Length: 113
Length: 113
Image (cartoon, rainbow over all chains, first blue to last red; front, side):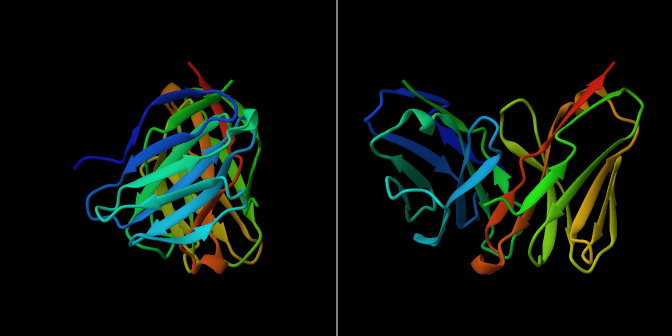
């Protein structure tokens, strides 16, 4: 069974640009979660998608957005990049809800210069 | 906002010793989970303990949960160099219907040969 896959592995962008990160969940999982892990700040919850809808959002500005496609894969878009957006972005998938076990991808390392 | 907080922030031990990490949380939970992260990669699920359970074992791992104190501990017995990683506790937010996991900042464990 294939795990959660994220692409790209690394991404370097210039301040002010837009970044698009992609995630494919485990087959049969309908929920996709996005987390930001900046140095020294632990994992910060960004977004939760389930069945194509945004179900919950963390304390991040609107320039962090995303979507979930009919095949349950997901995109995270970060507009107007700032230097402090540099972080490891982790995607996780699970069977819907109820705080069940989450399976993580290896992450996308975003560097904003 | 962080729901769980791990303690200590860092722990250094010798191979063969036991390692104990603690987690405190703030709100009611339906379960608590522990994850491991190797050097900035994706998180791997270790164990889930439900709110009506007090102790759970998995191989060399032992997890306890005290809901009256809102705390949990993870014990790794007979540690190995391969156990070197960051360990996170995770709980689900009540306001998300317990469907969104939040993580603490983690305990960094170093096991020396």
